[in-house]
Amino acid sequence: MRQVQVYNSGRMGVSAFQGVTLGVEKAVVLIQRQPKGQNKNKLGEQVTRRQFILTLCGTCATTVAMTSCGRQREVTDAAAKSEPEGKASRSAIGGSIGQEKRQRIVVVRNKRYVANGKITVEDARRMLQRGITELTGDETAKAAWLRIFEPEDIVGIKVNCLAGPKMSSHVEVANAIAFELMGVGVKGKHIIIWDRLNRELESAGYRVTLSSEPICIGTDTDGVGYEDEIYEVGNVGSQLSRIVTRVCNALINVPVVKDHGVVGYTGALKNWLGAVHNPNKYHDDGGDPHIAELNALHEIRSRQRLIICDALDVQYHGGPGFKPQFVVRHGALIISTDPVAVDVYCWKLVERYRKAKGLQSLESEGRKPKYILTAANEPLKLGIADEAKLQVIEIEV
View 1: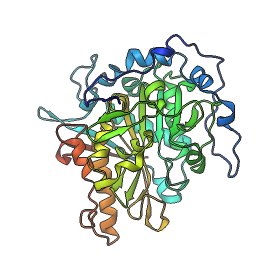
View 2: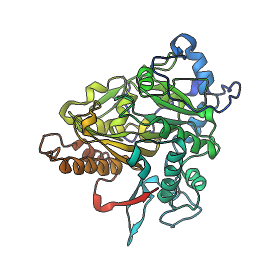
View 3: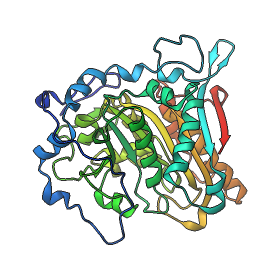
């Protein structure tokens, strides 16, 4: 059994694939919504493990080895204007209170979605462009994206598809993120929209494919799967998706905002349960400290560059399954580099809707999401939970 400490640099897991070259270039075809009842991509029958590695890794092995241990600490603090040409920790992105910086969270709301419940890729891109520039302080979206990502990156977009088409990360949002990345030079073949299971992706409207750009697959795709070794930290011991350990050097977390009947609230931190082989193991005691400790694994913590929370719809009760009577159109994307800060903000958002609807607080029901506070505190210190240290910027488009 392999043990990984909280701040261990970790094993890259790619040396066997160094020097593998990529095959034929493919035309850019965004992931389309999968027509109900169709499955044109029988990946389990078509793709061997070697074919998968050849298709996805290409130069990925070298990129992961060169950038995974360093790039996550190299996001320019443009918002604070302290060192315009230098590099600083992503957690430093934010405004200032005297000498103290606050963690920046940008909330971009789309009034059309609130009115009609419809989102397009173009609408989502406009929301992202406004949000990312506010996050970093850059004048253009391109400059903002390039502060966080490089054209050579291999980016995994981790969506959440557990609840089906009505309460999952929107296909349009995932595609908009991919478009923005391609717009700054990240190759479409190096962008992977993914979740745990192909059937969950398909049920949420994604078309599972290796033939389009971006790629869209589940960890259960033949040739992918989980590492054979157990990654441990604290009370957590799991096999990790090879999409995390072998393919991607950068990750974008795209959770949804939902009530959860066991752990109280599910969002950015809990979304990584979709990257392990045994997520059911981490719901005891309200997920505390298991969910927090999972996020402390180096392979997750070091690669997560950005959180883009899909809060177009918010489910304030009855989760994690979709319960339409408890869903409101909130119409927002919530963008930050701090998963704890995002979860604190969204937890309070759920509480506000619960109060407005006459429901008890999660704490009163014995479902306070304590794991969020555990993630913020010593020894993990994965982000900021103190609302006084958060700078929330709200925009309407």
